[in-house]
Image (cartoon, rainbow, N blue to C red):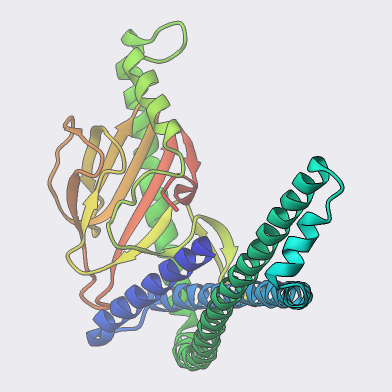
Length: 373
């Protein structure tokens, strides 16, 4: 239950942040594909939030059912104890006089029988006291379970109401998205051109990082050991690999609006999108951080574009593109989470997007597999 709630809370935080980013774009002078991607990301998280609510409702229903079953069993136990206790009280009442007790003991044939009868009465009285205590304990358990059941039913009602609200919200958001999609579809050629331009930029970055990796290989040939890598590189690479799935995100606040790999766009038929990294939407003025310790291989700017920083982590490389300004220089050592610059905000769309890549030597990797979930 706790895990489901944490996932639901995380989804809600991302939804709230997506709304904040969309609010920041209100003063835009042109529409963009990234705005649609941000809405799609928000809708995806909204659906995940609803799934979380439904899962929580299911868990609460199971707990309510289990509590109801236990309450029924406790009531049955109380009834059986009450019946037995009542019979014993009646029996004690019939034989309550001291004379009867005395006669019971005096009628013993010998000392052993007298001892056994005294012991019998002690056990009998002890049993009666135990049954009385058991009855009281069962009543307390019943009260606790009834209170727990009442609380669970209240929680379930709250969750169900939240689910109804979320379904209404998602319908409104889908309606709002349709307006944007219709507007962008009238500019499908512009959208396709935007995608192609991104791919051309990615190709230039690809060529640059491959060239840098090759230069690094040549430079380090003197330090190469039999194992094929410098000792310091082997240690750094090993440390990097140990942190797979745990590495911090390059921005503190983030929403992925462009996933790694090639896939069809969900809203434009026959339009394929290929990303060699991930596009991360964030807030205006957001700082960019190194995701792991290493050394800056290069800081550069492609004509017409903002700054790019490439950091080497042994045999691994990370690339951070679309920085408005840079706070590091080539050859400088950096630590995990050290600020290396600030993400640029587009003047026309008012969007702040970082393009991030992760490489192992000359092989691209899906960054999301390495970053903390």
